[in-house]
Image 1 (cartoon, helix red, strand yellow):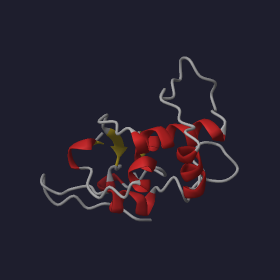
Image 2 (cartoon, one colour; image 1 turned 180 degrees about the vertical axis):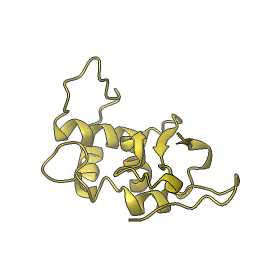
Image 3 (cartoon, rainbow, N blue to C red; image 1 turned 60 degrees about the horizontal axis):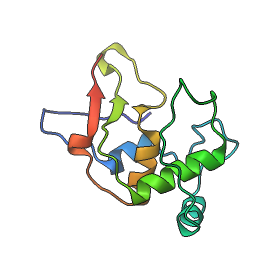
Length: 129
């Protein structure tokens, strides 16, 4: 299991660190048979298949079809979203390590990985409960 060590208030949670334990291009996190691929995102961008509306647990079915996830990521690659990515790093001293640390912002994370953004700094909200 990989864990983050935040030594002080000035440590930066980078995309590189985050993607080592939760990479949506390597793990099928949205209930799809296979993870979303770079080629699928590239194709969506090429044909202008984008989905601007974020997932809503109130308005959408419990599971989006894979093409909506692809379109959402493609949209975020082309249109950056400043909404923080919510991360739960667990409570290591109590032995709690979440299986998937991204609580909200998986599509934004995938877009950042695709665009090779290195730093999240002010774009990450870390929950310490």
